[in-house]
Image 1 (tube, rainbow, N blue to C red):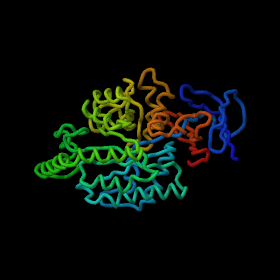
Image 2: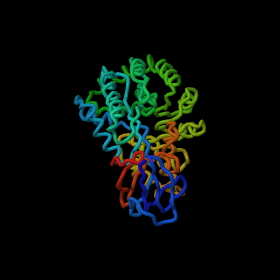
Image 3: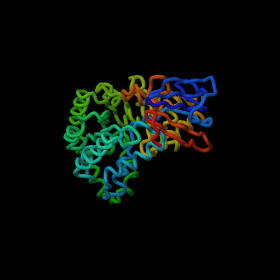
Image 4: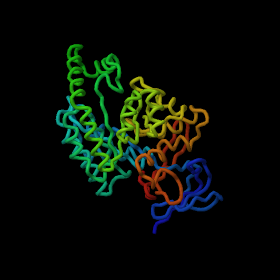
Length: 378
């Protein structure tokens, strides 16, 4: 039996902050003592919060492919990713792995296998700081995305799949002009070359998107894998998601879509970088506005691992009536619930002792310690 006491802490519970100590035994929270005093690991008056639960991060792929044409050792990439994730207070992470070949990577499956295989090896080997799951990001206009899903989905580590369509003129870039402005410089193509690229992508969308979506939705539901929609823009998009049994609406781009998703009971996920920056990088709806409207459930790191923790300490200063426990739920209890992980996400007796010590120092919160199931990992 192992036992740890965290004393002199400001403990953030589901609906309040209390001062006191926390008793952990064999990786599980046993008791919260608000009487004061006691001995144990002194938190020095810092916040003690639940470990963050991250459902959508592209960060592993960024470590694996740090430059165009450069592919890093997948286990080394995972190790670097895991260290940064844990150091940002994230104790449960769903690593996003894109599947479906495209013009950039005509044979995506070997790369996806490398990343998924690394995560599985890290889990089995017990050397990861955070607990890692797989989130398959399914690019629907790709001709081979269903084959990739069949190759990678049937494993306990795969717990989430999102159905995406990044076709120009669809969803995130509903305006072709906006798409051209965003990508013309990045892709380094002439107007004629860019138009030919757009025409090819539109043809793929018309040919593959609908049947691929139906196939992946059916497979995911049969396997018990949670489904997320991506970049819903219209009421029709949300109605399609609801009919497909989607649980999470990732990055709705309009207030109309977010409102409809909320009414349909979908958990609405937005990027924490949107909160930190105060706006979307592609000009879509502000996540902070959705929080203020009561339409946001989950924040994800997306492309900056520290952004969720930074965002939840910013939000109470930006949104009237929002306190820290409610803000913190967007990165702890709510994503845990949406992913079906009812053993974590809150500090309460019987829950996993996934904990983060945070010093709230202007202008940023500072992570001073991270514990997963009672064992210090960062």
